[in-house]
Length: 297
Ligand SMILES: Nc1ncnc2c1ncn2[C@@H]1O[C@H](COP(=O)(O)OP(=O)(O)OP(=O)(O)O)[C@@H](O)[C@H]1O
Ligand SMILES: [Mg+2]
Image (cartoon, rainbow, N blue to C red):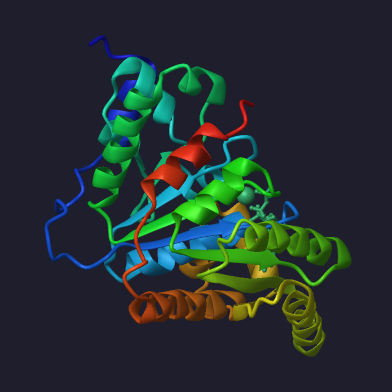
């Protein structure tokens, strides 16, 4: 096959193949989707910092950028994937070649592709892609999905695919309303197991806790759902400095209170995975729906 410049770029980003192949008895992949109702609440910030924290603990991390439309993980990680899953499907590129290596030890996969062309491929080819993806995910210890904001089908399918999901919410009225709308969809589609909240951008801890308690109480009363909060991440000026330095905050300043709290969130998702039962498996069918439902941008 002829090499395109994009493929050359991908090759130069690739330093080595993932270290081990999936083998029977190997421990389960920690798989978490990060979503929000409202945009701009810190999904990418949280995902990238969780990914960096876990990679620094010698876990092999694949960050799936499920929202190609807006500046995302690639900006912070300083390595834009030139190729996407579309290149696997239409140009015969291997998944391993689509994944970009980033300076922080995280592999990055651009997943959300042109939906219409992919639908035209037919189910058999798509099922093969899902199988490839799941097999490929077996090379990693951690799989994180940075979802688009909102409640469309691509988001809910990624949430359904991942055994654990985090809804990021900020302590402001529109973020809370939009988070509630997303939680309602999740509840109605019966995908509410494994969902946790993270409140981000808190300027006043007491106020943040009060607003969180209100959200939890409305969700309990109207949706009969008990949602854990696994992080109260403060607003941080250092986060802004880190972004300008194109570095995840945890690498830029690990002692910053927001970085410390995100490291605690990483510990909590590991604990939740350990506590989870057999259901903790990546769901290939939902994953595929997530990719298919991705908006063509
Ligand atoms: N705790 C925080 N303190 C300070 N700045 C933050 C914090 N969390 C996020 N930010 C900043 O807020 C902006 C939006 O964050 P981010 O891009 O992660 O949101 P998002 O939910 O992924 O947005 P989108 O919906 O567009 O994908 C970024 O500039 C990010 O650096
Ligand atoms: Mg984002």
